Structures are given as structure tokens and as C-alpha cells.
Amino acid sequence: MTATLTARGSNWLRSLSAWEVLKGSTGDNFNLVSFRPTDSLLFVLKTMKNTGISGAAVLSEKHPGHLSGTIDMLDIVTFICAKFGVSYPNPASAKRSLEGFQQPVEDVLNISGRDFPRSVTTTMPSGDLLRLLSLPNTHRVILTNESQVVTGLVTQSMVVKWLYANKEKLPPAILQEKVENLFPLAPVHTIKQDSYVIDAFTDIYEKQVSGLAVVNDRGQIVANISASDVKYLLTDNLMDLSSDVYARIADLFDLAIDTPLPNAPVPKGALFHRPVVISPKNTLEELMDIVQSKKVHRVYLADNERIPERVISLGDIIAVFAGLAITAE
Image (cartoon, rainbow, N blue to C red):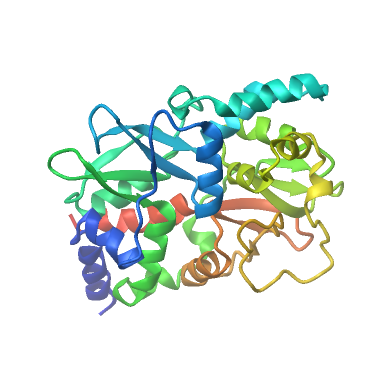
């Protein structure tokens, strides 16, 4: 019976199209957010903040609807590191750095050298889509029709949401497997809570990661900072971004570890990043439930002293099911 259910679930994972995955995760609520190459970086950043997204397609003005590239929060972090550097600026140099946000987004497409634009047809088999989104530095793929016109976008978050919504179709044995048996040990990149925000962004760029565990002097995890947090540093006053970039992490985050972790998802736009810490004994289904309810892109495994030992990303979760799809071929 278990073998039959596993085979059935594996076949379902590869039986749909990329477009069906998109619709299965969003229903009729999908709205493609895109930019023009001439849109300013400031406009892009504000739009990402207001819509809660971390990346989008940039469409050609010469060939309407066709893909010119993609812009991602990792690109913006790279831009900030290049503009602000690591030394505290005087007001004049800070103003010049901020003026750089008026330049067109086409000047910074993929400057991070990561998350290269990947476009696929809407008819790509779902198994192939899973494998693509489980690859390093592939957080989203652009969907195009037969005329190469962009029609949609699928992110890792959307795929995990789709998988969780259809968990009754997935092999029960996999869903009940403990996370310690599914995910290999992965290095947890950390940063001290008294570091500057610009230090964190520099580490994200140099270490080729999308987020860091913030730890206190005892090495205990107290927060999480990611490339997407750039959005939440932005207000109507650009100078606030400058001051926050040079602020200490401890001054911007609620880092108390003695209070219970909140059960509610982190509110959009709130600079409140409690790390989501789970047990190695949690099941894959429980992990997916936590990811969905907390609206997070990574969770941490820590020991009894809250020393982080492992990090699990959305790509790691997708890779489990991508492997199942392969077994059905």
C-alpha cells in the first residue's frame, strides 16, 4: 500500500504544467508585478515593499511583453554594499549614495551575479519546475507563452504553498519523515547582534547567501536578517534608509529570547524578525505547516541552548519532492 501511495504521489508531482502550479498556488488572485528598464531603483524598491515581493520581471520596452531580465533583493543588497561601503559616511556622501537610487533599474540587473533570470514555457512539466526551483540561487522562474511573452511567475514560496495545499496527494510516508533524516547538515551563517546592518548585507553578498542568523554573545540565535529586509528599512524619507543601514542590528530588532515566540505570522513591513526554530524531530508536514503559518523562507534547527546547528530553506523542501518526481520517471 505504501509503495502504491508513493508511486501515485510521485506521478502526480510530475503530471501538471507550470501554469497549473501557478494557478494552484494563487487561484484567481495572481497579479504579475513587472517593471520597465527605465523605472528608477527607488520606484522598484517602494513597489516591492508595498506588494510584499522580493523579485520581479523587467520587461522590454522595445519588444513589449518580452523579458529583459529580473530584479531581485540580492541585486539591491549588492547595490547598497557598493554605494554605502562599510564606513560611516558624512551627510554629503550619504546623500550622494542615496541619489543613486534614482538610476534606472536596467543598470543593476543581476549585479549580484546570482538568481539569474530563468524563463520557461507555461507548459513545462511540474516535475521539471520542481527540479529547477530546487537549484541553488533559483528563487523564481518566469513563465512565457509560445510567443515568448511573459505571462506569469512562479516562486519557491508559491511552490511550497501549492505542495502544502495538496498534501493529501503526497506520499504520507514522506510527510511523516523527520526533518533530521531528510536534510543534510548545512552551515549556518551567523552575525553578532551588535554588528551594523551594512555588515550583515555585506556578509550576505560575500558569503553568497540570502539570510543570516543573528546571535548574541553566547552564540544563541535571537533574530534572522535577510536580503528582503531592505524593503522594511525604506520609508518616505530616503535618509532614514541611510541611518538604518548604519544602525546596529540590536537597535532595530526585538532580540529578547526569554519571551515566547509569537504564534502569529510576522506582519508585513514590521522590523520584527523572530527566528523560527524547530526540532530535528519535527516531521516534514509540520515543517511545511510552520513555513506556511509563519510566512518565512528559512527555519533553523538549534540545540537546547538555542545554538543554531542547521538551516532549512524553501529550496531544500522543494528538493525533497523534486527527488520524488524523478523516481516516477
